[in-house]
Image (cartoon, rainbow, N blue to C red; front, side, top):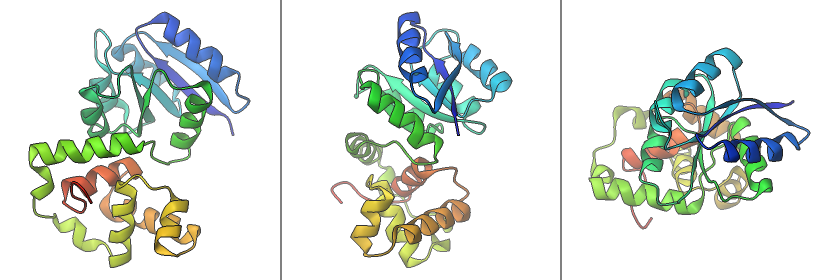
Length: 216
C-alpha cells in the first residue's frame, strides 16, 4: 500500500528536498505541498493524505493550530529545526502522532512516515523525557487519575505505562514476557476504552493522569 503524504512548510527548498527524498521511496507518494497552515488544512480536505509532515512555524496559520484542525482526519508528524522547540509539547497534545527534526536522515524521514501511517507513535526517548518534564513543571503529573483509568485492567495499565516510556511493541513484549501480538491486542483495547486515536495520545493520557511520573 502506498502512503499518501502532504508536506506543509513555508520554506520551498525544504518542501522540494523532502519531496525528492520521499518520492524516491516505492511505497510513498507526495500528493501535495502547502506553504502555510491554512493551505495545509485546505489540502487535507481536498487530497485526504494519510500523513502530513507539518512544520510548526508557518504564516497565516501555524502548524499547531493546523494540527488541531486536521488531526481527526489524518495523521500528523510535527517537523521542527530544534528538538527544544517550545511548540512540540503542545503539538502532541493537539493531536500530532509524532515529532521529527528537519535534520533527520532520508531513511529516518521515510521510516517516520511509514511508522505513523501504520498507527504507531513516533516518540523518540528524548521527546518522551521532555513530555514528562513538562508535565512535572506544570504540576500535571500529580493530578488525580480520571474515571477512565478505572476501565483499564492491571495488564493494560502496565502496557500504557510502557507505551508512555516510549517502548515499542517488541520491547513491551520482552519487558512483560508476553507475545507481541498480545501487546498489540492490549494497545488496541486501551485505545478503544479510553477513546484515543493512537499511541501518542495514550502516552499523553498516561502523563496527564499520573500513571507515569518523572524519573520512573
